[in-house]
Image 1 (tube, rainbow over the protein chains, first blue to last red):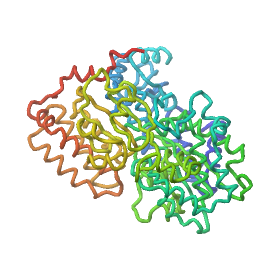
Image 2: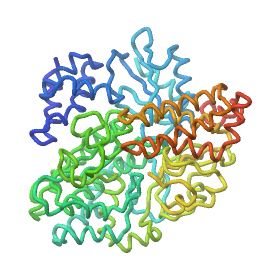
Image 3: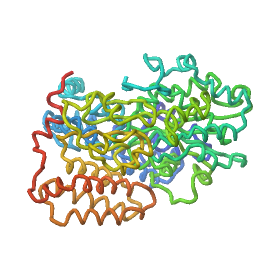
Image 4: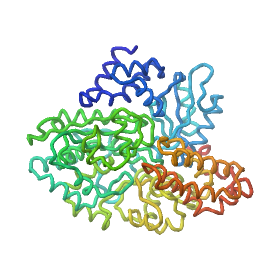
Length: 157
Length: 442
């Protein structure tokens, strides 16, 4: 189900915990699986559970509890916009509206060409850089005024 | 660089340049000297803890609990596994100081954790890092590799016979994991739902073993306390409020960012350091300690000094040191609506008063904001908050209630206006102008 490379990365995570606590690596393992496959299908979650020797339901509980896991397919790029209060005061909500207009979609929707999924997100812990957004859970983009958003969209192809 | 200013700083000294976070730079700044002093000088564990007690370092994550006292709760001579855990799950709206500490000075956290491990007889540590700051998580792992290669982590550290290893664990989008027992559950590979206490982590923590959890900034302060001595560290702040602290200033100021200042510095000074109010507008209110702290109206805030005691006297909390500044373009109902949505969204669902109550708080504030408020809604909100507070396992229910109570207490007229006139007291175009989004220059 996962490439040898991903499995190697998961093994590296497992090694961080005591030998009888493999389940501790489940958050990292699910993140790695999602990185490789784009989203977490039930099969992917079950595979991770099996690999770590835990019950599938326990891995599913984790996948559904934490907000950065995607349990449905998303676009090639997932853009998450923080609209929490500190960001809102410096344009986080406006940035979200701007993106909706530009992309012609709402939150939790994907552009028809499958390129971009837009998400509204909670505090990313970078309020001084507001407006803030994250691309594919990995890349944080700071000070996203209209010009910077245009640049980002031009880059996401 | 997002650390924009400082008065008599410690944690943020010499952090200019792209390589400040590297081990070589940290060593040049005197890094790992405190660890050497403790291990090579064979400082007894109790003496390390005493030094921390004397510094009156209070937990920087939000609760402000005295760190030395917390460390003394650990059964340090008890045989078997023990853990130290760093809480870098920084998701309290308004707070972004730990991100900068990990970004620019990660080795101070590593050194602080090793010293903590030694003082409490723990052989292993984990740093739980907010999943949203992925680049910082990766950097911290690199810093750990550097420390390991240099012999600061692993077995027989600096020839002392003390073994300690440290690993990074990332979150993946759950505010509740900043609560220390939820964080432990999360490291164990479970849903992050807080545990019932007692037992406290010092007796039953990670994997059921004695564990101490401290905030990133708390650990980062430890090397400075050992180097300076506890008393000198205390004097850098004010009585009962030892040391300097990082404040994250966000919202309607000209220069949002992190500022390191001695505890006890006037709020007015901090506001000035942050470039003053955006567009020269008037301060309306301020949330001085992260979104869970009660809001303080402008006049009261201008009289505060930034320390645990002064902010507490103003009816709020210093919390994590997250200062959310709101000017006169802010609709207080809308501001509260967004916070209430946050707590509703992030309630873990374990306790009924919080799971159901946060939903009610959001629904009622939302209908007021959207012109559908009812005359008795403010009483209803008050009643929901008192039915949540003190009736839940963790503090999230209280954290959701305090903004509601304080916003209504201090800005009651604005809420009443909303209900009566079915619209904002602050015109919508004024609110939009306040955010500066469409006029921002690069």
